[in-house]
Length: 325
Image 1: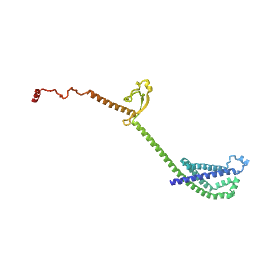
Image 2: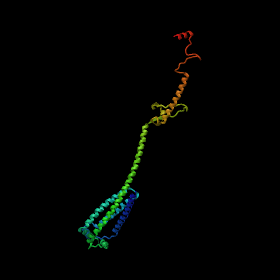
Image 3: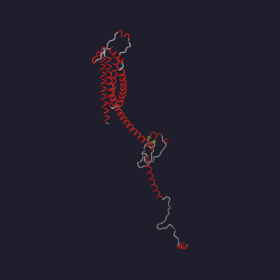
Image 4: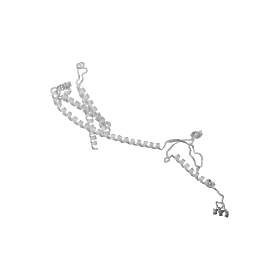
């Protein structure tokens, strides 16, 4: 966590100073362009070479565009670091990588070409065409006579300065890349947690839907309005085809949906049917028992007097004959 904070602070400082320095340099170049008095070409030179390109003006325009674009990209990177947006930081990092590569190759090529006499002679010749520019750089000891010698000595200092700048920019680039790696990991972690939470919710909803489907499917029924009956009257619910109903009954019927489930999770209509059926069974059993007691159905009824035996009385002789046997 401490390392990520250090990378964020370093990225914040790098983008802030990059925005400020590049903007100041671009503004100074544009101001110098307007204040600089370019030498007017003669009519003979204009007719002789219409397509001649002024190298100093081209370099001036390229430098102004480069520093202005660098200031804009650094401002985008600064906004990304402040708001912790990985997309803006990635844009600044990619631009910094491309800019670092281009500047390294260009600096190496420029230093290598500066050691050649032909390149120094061409630069001095281009400077000699702009006396106003030569007067401005006269303070640093550069003139037409010692231009090549001055460039030869300045190449070594320029190479050392460019090498130092490349090393510093490389460390800056590594700091920004490290901060972007941390920011991308943090963003991906948040996205993964959100997606896993959403996946859990989806699985939970599917499980509920599967559980409801396993309990039973929904079935459509039609309910007729309740007629004026007494409260103690028992009701029996039975399926009746809809084609047996009259047109008036069909218009008064109300549509309802019930789920066909198991006995443990039966619908209220089925529970009410079971309740009425159970109550009706108990009442029916009680009535049957009462009627059986009254009519004595299935028993033998013998009209006997109190104290009378089940078998007829025999005489004494008959009893004596049974005893002998």
